[in-house]
Amino acid sequence: YLKDRLLVIRTDGKAIVIDTTAPTVTVFVPATSNTLKVPITTLTATDNTGGSGVTGYMVTDTSIATNAEDAGWSATAPANYTFTTEGSKTLYAWAKDGAGNISASKSASVNIQILHGDINGDNIVDLKDAILAFQVLAGSNPSGIRSDYTISGVDVNGDNTIGLPEVIYILQKVAGIR
Image (cartoon, rainbow, N blue to C red):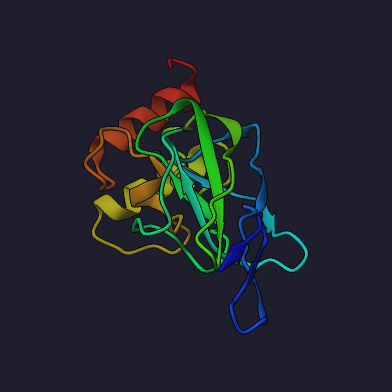
């Protein structure tokens, strides 16, 4: 075999193109989020012309490089990433191609400021949230509770249920005590 950087010529004279160029990736996320589940508004990757094509995406909150065999690769770009705590965070995105080449990471920062007590997800803590909480306490199953309540981080005391601590917190917030 005669080997060139992108081309291998077999002894029978046939050429085989070898993809040694990693794809490139671009990721954008909002500058702030009021939930632990942060939307990834854009994540795209491209491979070199004649390359093997982008076959996977990975998004993590660590800058540690990954390898092509790691669990967590997705064939499609993820729509969101869920953090475990609020604060200033950085997301790292990678892409891989069919030859196993992995892009350099692309990072984006996000500031997560959770609006505790926002039970209905309208980005305001108000009497609507208190009414929903009271309805839950009364044993009903009201509509209007945000679908991501248990993973959003808006739960006041971290028990992932709506109860008396939420009612008290919301009323204090509405009264301006908090």
